[in-house]
Image 1 (cartoon, rainbow, N blue to C red):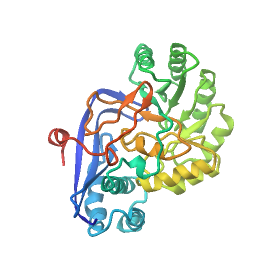
Image 2: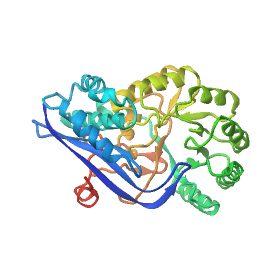
Image 3: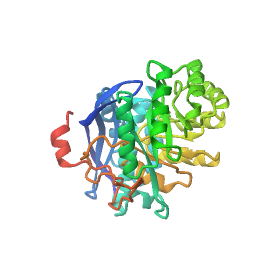
Image 4: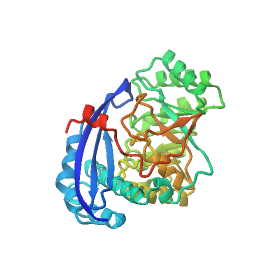
Length: 366
């Protein structure tokens, strides 16, 4: 099988309800990706996601720097292709951010091709298992633009759906208001439900230590992205001082970055994102590195769970899969299926990355 061409795209898809964290408010998401065509008639789809801006930059990287290098290649040589793309023209202007996100889309499309060529779901190609269910936690429970009443109502609704783990946003203007909101949710859900909080890089080290101290009595499973995502030393120090475990990884763009956080003992829960790390190929390396250090992987759902539902089935150190249900009817042909607090096993060939024709007709902007 040889690659004969590709078509890139941007889909801007509105979400059912505006959401906000400490960084921004979001009313739509951009899927930036490509369809890779082959002489076997099989098409692989890969994508990454932005919120609000940057999609055109990623598409330009795909069109000008990455896709020209794919023609004539066998997608089964996916690791060789990954290496060639990484050390190609994009290496000199990026190695993180838009260039790595673009490479993520390419790598996902190639793995999608490999699975489709074998007529198998991706998790099976990766040697995954269905012997244990994949538990899920819901981030939709606690956006910063929700009132305390909204938080309680949403948490109650999700518990009724079978969730046993929820996450809420912190990092508002007043740390003590964060404390009140978290305490209200903990009281509403009881002590048996896992509760995580996410600051989205809001704090400097002093504010992070203060917040960790104020929040420690709410029985939190982790404190996510408290500091700048490149601050290894700051996270290592906070992890030593905090009684709350530290989770991070959604804004790390290389295996080297994860190595530094892991070996400096700056992280407890690894949240590697397949849409930002460079795709499935390096994602698996990060998961293996975490496993070698006895750390659990709970991926950040920058793909809206479609690819990660396969990947977590292929690693021994998975814990929870993050879900953010942004719409009742999503743009994918085979939308992730959730039931009673678990992710059901995908059965269709591929990586679950194909979009519906209606999504392309209604939401394509480039």
